[in-house]
Image (tube, rainbow, N blue to C red; front, top):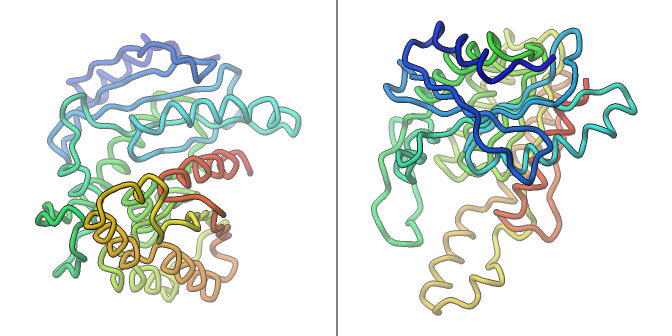
Length: 314
């Protein structure tokens, strides 16, 4: 039986002290209600929202698989729709749709500055391209702190209050979130059982991105009991100007094209996939796809689709 929203609220108070838990309005995208829970992160020093969708069915004996998604406010609606749609097909093969946990900021707090800080791993030095808007780079390097909050605070909260299978946990991220997904795999591979990186921003200190995965694969202690499921996807058009971008001024088009070409999204993703294929052996089960005809934004929806399918697959 599903846990009632109110019961979750009582449990959450015991865990985190300053907690507000209440259901959000049901959306037209999902058959089930999307619940909103607010918990205080001691690690981040601020309140965080968890937007949660749960299948409207009896949980399996070991609990539902679960997807933890970065950028939860932007992803929860589509994830709920996809998980709902996958439900009847999964039932045919005795597979359960996943619980979706969208990790989000409080209304009015989230900003591009905060996201850039939270979704970039720390580094001694940063080698960064010029931004298309020609503005200085924002503060960087809070990624490890953010991951610790997800792993050490958010995951235990979910495990204590929702019927999830702790052996079937998937982390999803897109763009800088995709970068953070691969960084989580490289630095704490046991934290999740599966990882889905959509259009990962591997241009962010590129040598560091590859060296940390290389170090993981060279580590003799990296020997998971079961292969880690990893999906990497990128749009084939991510290094080109999109239709809408072509309608901007010549100067803007030139800056945007230079940014995309320098970021080299497709080739870097291919190189990362090749590295993992060459060195992971049976420790990582990799699915890598270039989504034909898709750009950076449209590729996200396909990567989310793949995440639901991966989470449901034992």
